[in-house]
View (cartoon, rainbow, N blue to C red):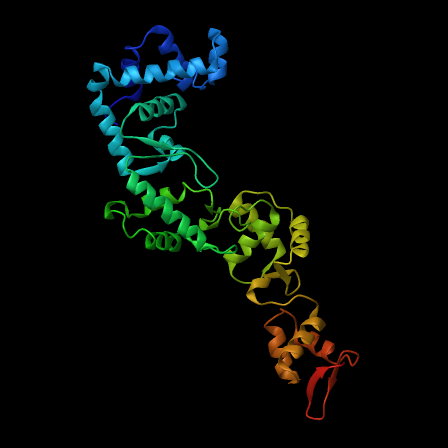
Length: 340
């Protein structure tokens, strides 16, 4: 920034009477303390009602906007407007302030300039969106509607790579200026909504999904296996949780969580896979039963082939289970079926 927000605000506050200036400084955290005070706490200091404090605040803002000093500061507000435009024309308040500076007091001065500036419009936080600022009503309306449509097209278990999510979002932004259609702006727009989120691995989906808002070892384990793409030993799951998420994962605890959660299937000695990959649960005998239920009578070789796609076990283990006449029988053609 060429302009200095603190100096700009200091010059603007000079036009106010002492009490109005003190109220604004306290209300927006512009003094030595960056803490923004409530209407009630300011009222208690002066022995007046919170409504009276609100009137003084509105009076102060009106007087500043009508002052000659405000006109002199037009270039500073124009620079701020260009910054908002470069960030996408509409942006979450927290993202805008963090982009400007990490200093809380300086953020408060920028915030005060946004409130004063006649080009800036604030939309309050609700159940769907965070606080955000925009400089174009039509753009704001289009982005909001596109985010709502994107949300409606997502399924509960969707885990979408960032590039794919950005591309999907772009499909809903047909009438938005090309200058905003870059990855950084689109990701800023995505961060405005509470309904869509990103997990620690940079994948997107519904914010309500445990695949996105990972909260415990089971969710972290799910993301580890999904990232790995094939069965993995529970010891390696615990190790990966620590490496990827910085969460201390005890091996025994991780193993217990994998056992309890139907999203995981034990497919070998300590090896776990995701049930969504098509693996079936149960011991080897149960897997043989399910294979035969699905396919009908099969030869020994066919049973072994299909079971090995479900379990990482030795062929002999399958043969031993298959010869248990209590559960399976062999016909004159050498094919096996279930004992009814």
